[in-house]
Image (tube, rainbow, N blue to C red; front, side, top):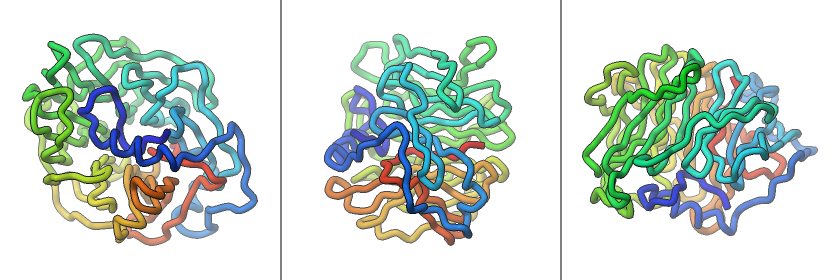
Length: 340
């Protein structure tokens, strides 16, 4: 079963419930190593510069890697629990971080060796996810949701784990109970973080109604009130999540709006729509920048959600040109990220 968005025991991850059902019938089997005679990577366009770079992604409860031409696909590690999701690379391209079952953070070498349990969600923590390695490699930011009574949300926070000491510091927190935070991503200089803020109709952990989503920015030190760049109002149908990412070389942020990709400056100016999909037969979600910031890799879904979805990875230039499908080999790909 694939997850195009988020999954966790609580209903506070409502888009996951939708998309878990979406791909229950559309999941494609993955093999440990596959090959394809037909490469989906063109010799020109944004893909050419990344032909030898691994793509890390999640599929069928496991974090995997694949070459852009689809000739090599493998499970990163079988030595950690299932329910592996939301992988990210260290900036030196040597290690991968991901969560398992929304309760543990793991890091592992890109070849699958040396898996390390880096952090565990314990009460009052109810869930963690969306780990992101800092540019200097010293910290991993992720989101946590907490409950004091097991029934309502008491705190949602973006925190950072110091890999040398094991200490965890809070970057930004919301204690309203109606807000959950998602998908923190560092700026290239490590001084700011962009994230998604979702507001719910109540503070119940079982609440499924999302009333608004926003893309916001906070400093990584001394954060108080966030700066809101984009606010999306409900009702929401389908995945819908902005899932923002920050360019490693610029003040540019990419996010998904209505199953299309848009970019915006960190000061909230200059929003530009990158893709022009119909949101019926073609969808663009879960965007991330390539390591040099010159292009965007995203989950490319063809077909109508809930009916005939077919998720894979695609690469597109910042100006919306040169789109190519990457991965190939009949592999289902979600949450793709290129190796630095």
